[in-house]
Image (cartoon, rainbow, N blue to C red):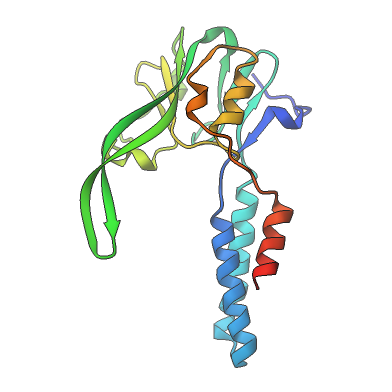
Amino acid sequence: MRIMKTLKDDNIFYIKSTSWLTMAFGALIVATFSVLLHYHFLFLHYLLFAISLISLLISYRKYATFNNRSLTILFGTKTPGITIAYDNIESVKSETKKIDGIIRLGEFNGPCIKEIKYVLINLKAPLEKRCLPNKNEKPDYQIEDKKIQIAENGLSIILYQPPKGGFRPLLDKMSKSMRIFNAEMFEYEEALSDENIVAYIIGSA
């Protein structure tokens, strides 16, 4: 099913990305020292600004879209998207689980137990074969690096990383068409507008 280009703004969720902000700060610092010390630093600040701009554009990639009949998940997949009809969704639950992770403190790396929160979508009928995972997926101990996980039988989808604004607005939108369990597990995230972030960067200079 193709997504209509006339989707309303509240029917589109974008990926969560702030990497551009780090690059912008770095570029600002290098540019400041370049002016104060009268040294070009190999024009590194221009490169950082360029990377920051590219990262900012990437942050406008879509995470998920809705229409009156289905949800399409676009984030974290290597396909045009996974479209799920509302009547094929059995349940949507917010859950937590503990995983074996790695803690990094300077030069020390050691094992630890971490608790992660995620959204589980259970389906009544399996997804198409093109959406099913291949066998070279990341192992469970790298679960924090995963964005989305699809069960081998195609009957469930786990969303590990939220869209811009967090999981709660996404779940609120889904709740208009289906029943959501444990949505209160996620708090609302205050999403800064691009204008506010840019003003903050300039004000910090």
